[in-house]
Image (tube, rainbow, N blue to C red):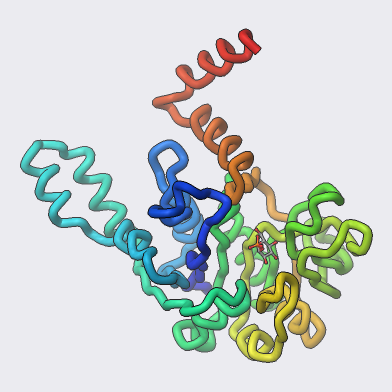
Length: 292
Ligand code: G1P
């Protein structure tokens, strides 16, 4: 089954990036000169997604505007012979179809996903959370789509191994490896942010999911969970008890850009991979390191 829609929740307040997020949505903060949300949307497009569904809240229209055309700016660039820049911003305005729904109250990730119920209908869909950037030879979402197809179009959750002390930041899964597939696990349980002393495994999701539309039924059934919020994890936990749900160890390097440390690490690494900045960045790092 070809998956055409990706849900990207962007309604959060971004308090870990205050004061910048007082006026700018966290998703619009750039790594070098590209907003973080652009990388997430690009991963979806590179995985074959044709429509992005943002779950948005008030005062965050700039995310939708970014992916729209800006005719005034285009006219200005044209009049000033800035053809390269014109081409660049036109391309972003035509990247992909964007639709959005409003999450009127912030009651958790499960609540945000449930808001897309009518837009998704009966289709399988991808979910990408914006706090993690994953860079690899093949987009993470594409890898999960392939696993889903292999196992009868069933849901697949992207996972990675994390240090035990970090499990309480994530949805953690438990299960057993599939025969002959060392990267894929048949899920038995999914627990939101367990204590390190209580966790069954250290297999964590950084927020990449392939889901089937019956998730909405489970989302309607769950009660408030960790953090007193409606958790997507709790709905997936119910779902994996009624039919096969898989978790897959994706390949690729992941940056936790949801906090300033991961954001800084991503910025340094992206500069070192950027042809315009590569030499400058490595010379600068060496120079600064000498003075430490
Ligand atoms: C959310 C999910 C969690 C997941 C994490 C990945 O938590 O609830 O299961 O592991 O994203 O970033 P949050 O970080 O929004 O608290």
